[in-house]
Image (cartoon, rainbow, N blue to C red; front, top):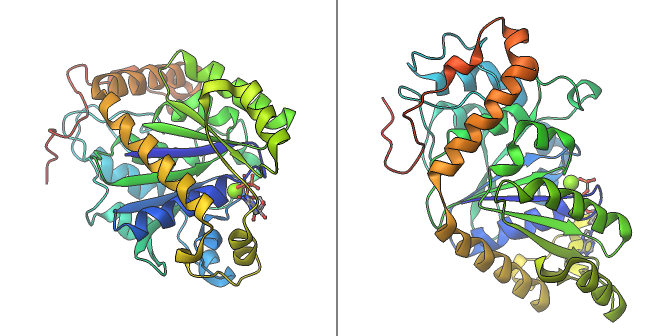
Length: 326
Ligand SMILES: Nc1ncnc2c1ncn2[C@@H]1O[C@H](COP(=O)(O)OP(=O)(O)OP(=O)(O)O)[C@@H](O)[C@H]1O
Ligand SMILES: [Mg+2]
């Protein structure tokens, strides 16, 4: 299952992504964490020290390898140069699984040992000014989009993406790639306005969006979120001393996380699991094609000098039954 944590800067996306990943790992569920946020802190939140985090390979720097592998022998994709971040898979493309070894994971994923279990971690790499907004072709999150668009994931295996609620993910369609999107909102007008904006984009695409209130301090905060967000408010999380201790570089064992927060994580898991029943690979494929055509027209065709609409394989539907060539 594919799960995103989005929200305004500083709302707690990284914190909650990391806690959710720890929760999954502690229950023995296979989990892969992806840091696609502007501020790359997920490694640290999973307990890596500065040096270890800095040593993680950047997906953004392995785009040629990723494209070359995923392209496989798909005859519609003539070269890695004409493969853009939205190029959809078709017959001949190589697909990825959550749990397997493949050249993409070899290059980009690292195992992170937690005190309960372990996870794979991939990071986009630090963002530069050029990544924000205009440089679609080289976009760092492009690697994550390609990954998600070629991923065949099943029930009880999880890819958790920590990302910004930015215009980049709306333009490329990345916001439609998830079974469920958790929008982290503090009880503030800004937090709520990011939710409203996201909701508006999400509405037309059948995105399942749930709000996680964070840093909720009392009944007044809770009232505020309830009245502003209504039924999309899934759960709230208060200040966590466990999180604060981790921020000091002294993470207690995960088993010592506060009960209320542990309950909140279980709730997130249940909400995610329920969405498996809503899964529609046909719609997933259709949306990927929709955004590819849009990106092709707005910059891709011009940038590559090719007609990228021809990359779409009309008969192809991504899904668990699709067989990848060796
Ligand atoms: N429930 C919580 N209890 C205690 N501290 C928290 C909690 N949630 C977040 N924080 C703290 O708030 C700060 C911001 O959180 P975090 O880095 O997770 O936000 P973010 O949305 O990922 O921010 P950015 O946009 O910078 O990536 C961190 O110092 C984090 O430790
Ligand atoms: Mg963050």
